[in-house]
Length: 640
Image (cartoon, rainbow, N blue to C red; front, side):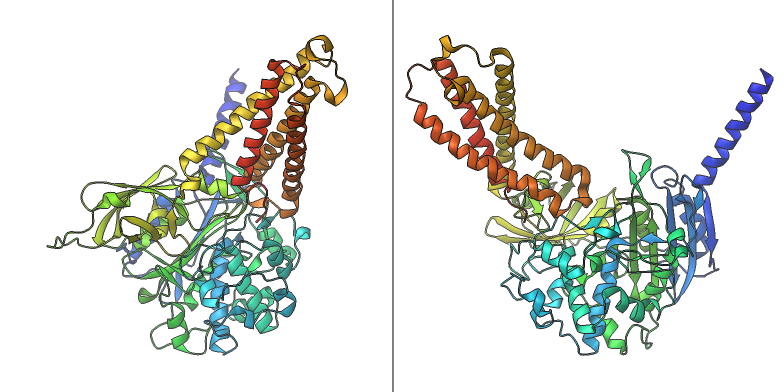
């Protein structure tokens, strides 16, 4: 009994040590005593203890591992690893060697590369990109509007989102960048330059221009002009992560959240549209990029030949956007980008005037507390004074309504995912509104006519993604909310409004009920009662007719339910080729429904068929037609 008690105590102690090791810093390096403060006013002398305390609330609970680096005046003054790169193996995060997936932070390298080529006069950022694309690609390039590199940098190319083939679970699945772009082929559904809609496709298209103009593959170009120049030797842009065995061993495992707490291991991401998110590297390597973007006044960045080129790169070109670098809310003007893959999240931000930067990488999908929270902690929020004036500002009630991002899967069946979760604007007192996004809220105050500045929120993502809203109003109608950095919004179209969504769900519900009735009829009745049903056999038998109608209904329901569930479960891993059979099946069902309608109309006058079965056949056919109309309305007949 005593021995059992001793074993229990030892087990508890070991468990406690493991728990403490999971929430304690794993490695620390480049910790330098620095005077002064961060842009938020935090004393740099307290940097380590402040970040330790903040990160400790999440490591081992919702985040398996993280690495944080802080740059000031051209050097890394803080870098530290927290938690585990591999939870199962208890392998700790090392900021100088642990490799993370950077996701969309990669885009900053794409835009900087474009600026390098513009400096070398190999690209005109305001010239139609057709000038630079290969002829083999242009043969299939269907867009008729002129698109410039600047449009791609501002995410104003007019493209809808493309929901397939962004991430593969195996490097063998990857084709060439040109093949990935030709397969993507999203709709260009709004006027170029009129709105900003975040586009992985547009960024990859810019990457193809870089490849064509430079004569080098994207990853080769980055190796030569970035990684070798900045001594970023723990970083690779190879989409297949075809690197040394050492780098493979140093890469962290990726994880996905499970509910409100905890996480499960997921797979590494192989990005088909590589220039949009294929870089893997360490936090200290990414900090070197931040140093290159924050040189001392009068100095030239090692990435450019002229000081003016960096100034142009970081000059705003669209609301909250500077040539692809997103402008953040903070005490000082700041720029950067976030990144997400199937199992990693990162955040990169620089404050040029302060020669300051903060870089955070985590190995869990969709993480915002550490990635966005540390940025806000060190960079602060902008402050403003609201001056009451004699000019009466517009009533915020006219802005109330539901809005949807321009970044949506327009033209494909995936668009229903965008319309099901619109953003809601509500008036809140005089000159104030509340923004609600999937249950998360933030308050805004009107600082100028139809211009709203964030005033309070509990979620850091609002400060980063939605710091300011400009409502474009025509008469009493809101035409657009200009947010910038890919997040502009339009009013929810009436054709996709919530009543339409409810009606669509009602039709689907009725279809399910009738399909079940058809199955019950098959089980209970079979094909046996000729006395009641008339003297028919085979397909002429009314019961068989019902069963055929029900069968088509069941096929249509199952087909679209499976493709919807498959897409929802797979998320980033949905491939174009895997979806195609389901879309083709809808055409088969539609053609079969046409034949059923003809046959039903032809046999409807037969008086030997009872009214009971007439009603059942009629309701089943109507339901099938309604279901097909719903699938047409929500683009379940289209891949793009």
